[in-house]
Image 1 (tube, rainbow, N blue to C red):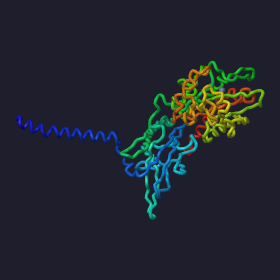
Image 2 (tube, rainbow, N blue to C red; image 1 turned 120 degrees about the vertical axis):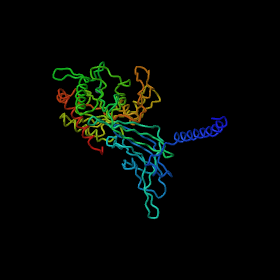
Image 3 (tube, rainbow, N blue to C red; image 1 turned 135 degrees about the vertical axis):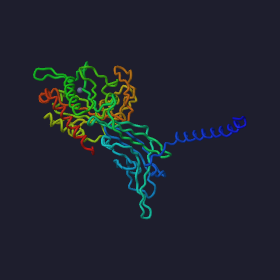
Image 4 (cartoon, rainbow, N blue to C red; image 1 turned 180 degrees about the vertical axis):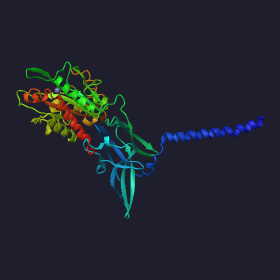
Length: 435
Ligand SMILES: [Zn+2]
């Protein structure tokens, strides 16, 4: 190549190269800011969009709260998960521009029944102008304090679905992408957690029956081990806070208030036995302690199936009772005054029992944000999930009164029956997509 030719070559190639690199960066920059719009979202009307102000998963349910002001002439609003081929209507109650998928934390969008696929969260409406009807889709932006979420369905025939909820803005169109794909559970994810109450240095209550001494810790463990065995026979992966007579921490790793969320379990069963005060009325039968703001479907099934399988009865106890066999114990004004840290962050609308309140994170108004660390004789490490919006659904089950001889005649040697009652309730509850 002559020198002249070389100069000419450089004069054209170099600017051309620089130009191409510039265009490449421009394109990369555009891609960085705007994610490509999936085909379905091409049909979105961007003149208005909805805001999600709360999003939470509790047990097997997902719930949203938000607001949407429909454009003029647009009505028949419906929240849905949609893609090119499908529209799945979600529970949707809207009043004065504010909407919710359910007023109960354990109702709403049942994640167990979502089919495989990729969906987008949208609001569908019908625009009516001069007798002409047009279908409109509006997108949804995230205005909540939380972001992406992940959920594994309960194991069914050795398989699970992994559901990924990811907020994104596609070329100026904000929405939640919901992806459902088949998988198996990662090592650290479980279906259900069982928490046999007490253990080790804490035997719980104790009683004599037929000349033999029993501790609550032992009875709780006996029922829990039977329950674990039966759940595993059904294919579920089960985590336990203890499998022998050892101490269980509450807030530390694997603790009663932590393990259910550490393992991403859908349900957490705390198994206990009761005792009544001899100065007060004699009590017997089962009591199920639950969170506030829940629908009682599953709790009712637990009550009915346990009393049927174990041939026992509903407790006649009235204090804290909200429905037959179902109890909600709240903090009292005195509990709040007695709190070790003042001003207390507790209120009388919060559940007293940590193995319900703390396990539900924000769903159940968990309070242990670390303020009780190193206080007096009460050492409570921080609940790492106190602020979580994606938690297990906890139940505290009191199977009977150990100082009631009739209850003991049903309990001793029949751990199997109590476990079977819980199993039957779970199967009944999970078989219905409407739950
Ligand atoms: Zn107990």
